[in-house]
Length: 173
Image (cartoon, rainbow, N blue to C red):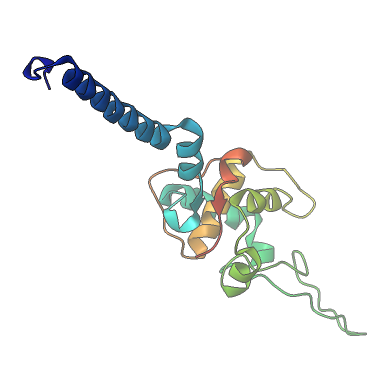
């Protein structure tokens, strides 16, 4: 828009004011969208259905699972319930007598609405008698495997081994 088209100063001034108002409004709406806090908060909140781990990461988690977790949580992640003791009979099993399911409906019911950080922290308390015996990356890989076992989709980025990056990820469908 050029101002020389206007015949008098009042018309030109009105055009400049209108143009300034349009530019100001556009800047405000762009600023609202790109404000660091607003954009980061909305982008940070995710769900496990958004693909928060990679297939390769779950594969590494499976290797750790076979070494350290399968004894208690069993091959398919169904876990095992404590068996009541019966006098005169030995019902001992190897591993923990009670290990909660990490796959299936029982897991989903218990963990629905919780965060990946909470699951990561719970996983870090294991194996029994060996809390924090794995690296943070190995625990993140195990959490990725748990997500895979529960049929949550994989994505292009690995699950981070840092609690603050896991906090915004919600478990559930």
